Length: 248
Image 1 (cartoon, rainbow, N blue to C red):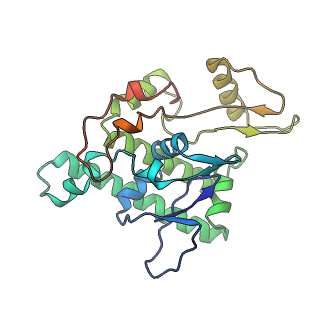
Image 2: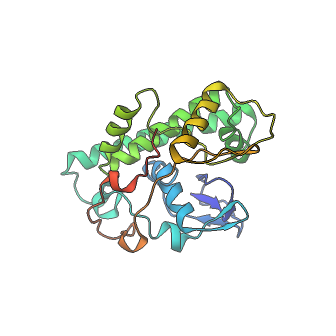
């Protein structure tokens, strides 16, 4: 799997080993689709954005800061995968991540072919709040399902339960906005504008004429407390202490 060293989106692509790669790409030796589901999730994205540097507004990813410190779920550690599947729960977790990762990967590939778009164009549309085509909406839904599966893999299902109870009308993990740079006369769909206004009120932000802001971010544990992918995973902190009211 590869990503650009610098990009405004954190989008992973799976390539064949025979492909000659540019020096401006970061290569991750991950083959399982379950790993794609994990690193493509919002949980991993927030971790990376928290510890990476930036180039203007773009993410300047660093494997030593962002990937090597990232705590993999126990079910995806090498030690768990190599041992007999005596733990049915871990085997089920790996299978769920494999399933949603494969679904998202295949659908995204078919969508790009159908639209004659590459990854950059596809995810520019994915993050465009005015984009309402059925294909992009379905891709957002698949990303939401992937985020939910990853949270469950960490044993953080309590977050989903609490989020659904607090606001049953919204999917607890779904398409979210980090920021919007808008013209003053820009017209957004009513549902999107209501969500931005609600987020601004709940966070105490003052809305600016040209910039509206709505965030959906995870608060990550300290890197010093994290386990590397090859290390033995210690107990993960409760999700309620690692989320900051961002699941709406």
